[in-house]
Length: 240
Image (cartoon, rainbow, N blue to C red):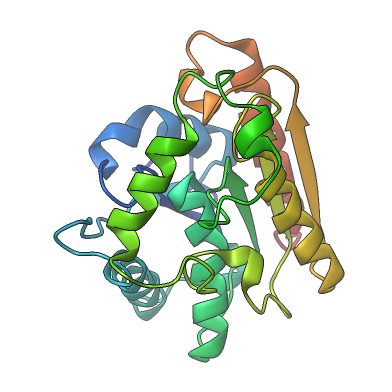
């Protein structure tokens, strides 16, 4: 997606959510387009194959391949940003750890919206927020995780970035709704990043539900969250 005004070389790599089972770039034109306008950047929305037909690690490997392709096209990593929501929020961190391990250039910064960061689902909010978030329940999340993992352990660091080696990553913003079942594990991800000397920020929105940013046309909180994410990303870019 390319807005009318683009700063030279500026690109956002956006990874869609959907529990690794549903979703596609076609469902993210609104959210990605709004970020494109705020960032004055083109947005690259990769396809990745979905579970259960293509379980772990195929969605992740496909996304890493798309990231590598973008760099191979001559993308300047200093002008590259990464963001994603839910499963894509987790992959925002995981793609960077995989890129680092593969010797690929890292982006300037990343934003994880409502990241599904721990497939063990051990955070306290998985129980004390049950019934508050209209989009999720622990029973359904457990089922989705099993379908994606296909026998792999949920604490595999490539599936759950709260267990990953995140040293050396660029700045990461973790933004989460206070009503989300994933609240505790998103907070754990932010702490894990901080403890490993990754500069970043945690933004908790009272009363907000899973990936409320998708409702930018109705919720002022969604528009403000997108504004905040854009500011975080732009601060990480080199000044001209």
